[in-house]
Image 1 (cartoon, rainbow, N blue to C red):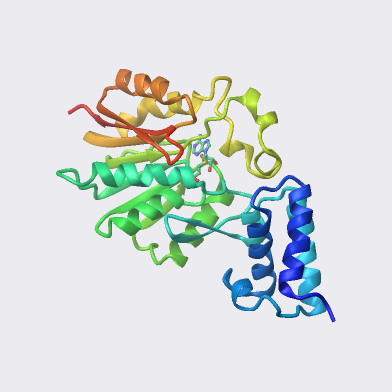
Image 2: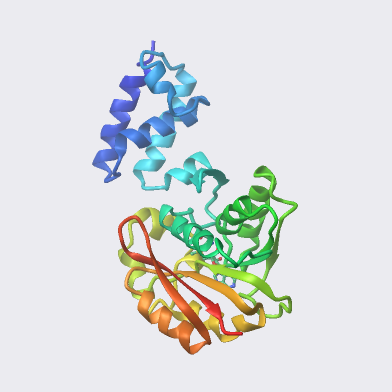
Length: 284
Ligand SMILES: C[S@@+](CC[C@H](N)C(=O)[O-])C[C@H]1O[C@@H](n2cnc3c(N)ncnc32)[C@H](O)[C@@H]1O
């Protein structure tokens, strides 16, 4: 007889903790739930349940991979973002809770007279930003652009799974280059980590996430410069631009936006009180 679910989770949590994984018990619980095809509440309901040999082997393999710091989302294939369930693979950035700040910021700025009907998401990855916005704005439609075909395939699957494929399309592209349509709202969470800081990132990010989703050049701001160079070609006068930024980058990006013709700038803080997004309207 193999050990019961609670025992298996406790041993796995010890292994994960020793490997430097924070929230080790919670992660072990999620991995076991995934291994046996249950929801995460099952451990609470059935702590004494005995695992089959096959279930235990599957769980052990997952724990071993996680102890090598492979991200949890790559092992389960899922990540919750804005209370929606997104498919995640090694080809896309694992959607971050911090990025929900961009959704909150956009919705906050859409409350009064500004009602976007067409949304453009530059560097869409899993599609989490565009699809979350469209789930909140059912009359809107939008386009997600990425320079990774593999990421676009994931985003398209997410659109279908979330029932948002009639509202969203995804295209290969280099930011907004070559697009001639004008949008009401442009959002972007571009790669913003200074290249010299990649080596010092936690292993989950450094070793498993696509580097094209991370690196923003020497000072981390290259992609903002590239996007701002011609964003006015795809944003209507009076339209709104919202960037996610790295910690400490908000004032630089805000200044760059002002120089590119944006006004009524707002700085939006995440749950850790870090300025995480900058938004502004393009002058008429
Ligand atoms: C930080 S990730 C953001 C992904 C997703 N929007 C999110 O918030 O989780 C940046 C994305 O930009 C894409 N990207 C990088 N350079 C690009 C470019 N020149 N044109 C279009 N997309 C680009 C990357 O492939 C990656 O998917």
